[in-house]
Length: 119
Image (cartoon, rainbow, N blue to C red; front, side, top):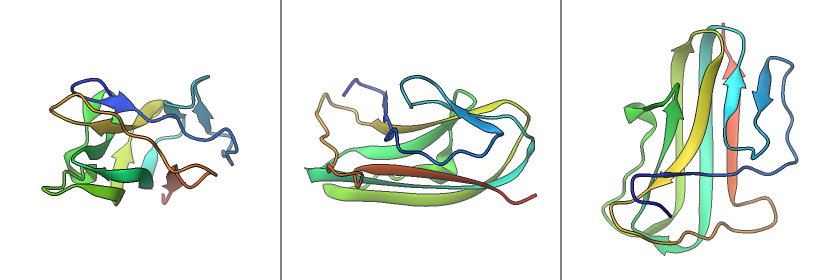
């Protein structure tokens, strides 16, 4: 894991609405339609870590989406409601102030991202 933050690649088995696209690495999701969205994520690692998770929206760390535990944990989750302009980008990221390695739980349970347009 790089200092500052590393995008989490999400599984290839995705259900995407026609107005959401993923880049080839499944790390950046582009929301074409402007509106208010509910975005939630879950990240599960194989061991407790002193790392954090957050969404990066249009290149900016989203403070309301940040989970930065003070003790090591292996499960991270959060949900936010946000208004997005057209063609917004969303990335799920793990971050740390020290170099470390995070291994996600296998079998599709390692990480998920849900983006739902409310209005």
